[in-house]
Image 1 (cartoon, rainbow, N blue to C red):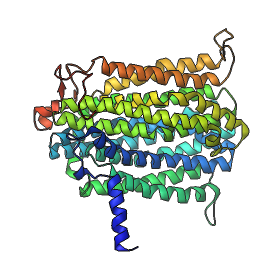
Image 2 (cartoon, rainbow, N blue to C red):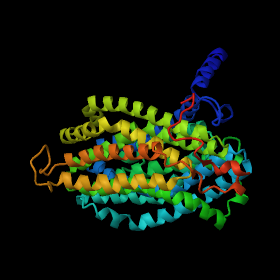
Image 3 (cartoon, one colour):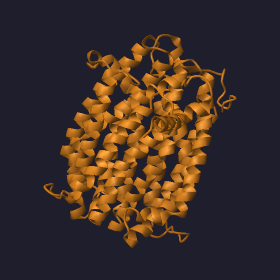
Image 4 (cartoon, rainbow, N blue to C red):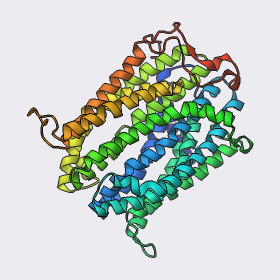
Length: 507
């Protein structure tokens, strides 16, 4: 390739991506900052979902039982990872607030403590999961062939949890510092590696034995492990994003308590989602294997479609944290409102496409007529509500970035524990003795209905919580200590000076 072409390519990429040194998240245009911060997150998350999509694609061609097995195991994987995500979110928020306050030493200390605590949590949860996974999966009451394969899959994933946690904390800390591009490139390399070895280990090629479901799990762990090694190496060097210092990684009990104050509610929020999926899966397994497989494919499709909303969520989290650290209370409100509107529009558009092409989307992963029919029904029930999920994620990111992780957790518990699960059971099991629509009939449609209703209600609660002024007069960074972050700027107290309904020219 000629030098001129290389420069042209670099110039085009430079128009799409802005590095940490080129972004000032505490000043300038909010839409522009959020776009350049979130775009690499979208790509990173799409790449991350491809781990699961690759497993789903190849195992769908291996056997329907294998696909049902990872459908059974995936919610449990999500549960384990969610338990550790709270710690990474806590670290990301603290790094963002200290970065906004221009206190590099406090940001590096927060990052170092978060890495050590997260890795220890990964080891602990991994050992616990390996021992308990068989008993946990028994709860779902799946067919013996499916259950056995799911146990094999989950035991390998459990032993690999330290690697999964390690790479997740790398992404979170870099994001808190404002660098979302480096994790994107690291993820790209490991995804290519995973896609290359996945079919080799599942089907067996040459000297490699046919490992089926277990092969897919091994491929995932090897890929995530390589990503973690690269991520830790980059943070130790400190040439990108955030630096960690080995001497500061010895657990500081006082700081651990600080991380837990932020991290435990964030874990509750993420774990609430995971427990909900697992609990709903118990209801799903009351139906046929094809319904279980359709549910598993649908959940993976959602994981891909919701990537823009999750990216905006994480972008808002970082921008909120940095602006609180910098004392820019006006930008906190404007960022959250703009993000909610944008996320609603993007997810609504994706919902239209999903509704129209639902059968074709399911057929990419499993072409069994029963799975395609049920999976398409699932997608078409929830697709019209995608925009509301976008609103929920945008405001949740703002609450977390402000240190209000308990607020985000409360909304999640409301969504999953008190709305989705009860409705899913009642509506799908014919408990209501009325003959209206599908009610009064035992049908999985009741489960799909619960997903749609719960998303709308939770988005309404999150928006109302923000817009009706529940942040007014509240210290948004409850878990931040001024002495750790260079002064009162990081206290981030929002008072009546900025009403929740206000806007700025950037919004």
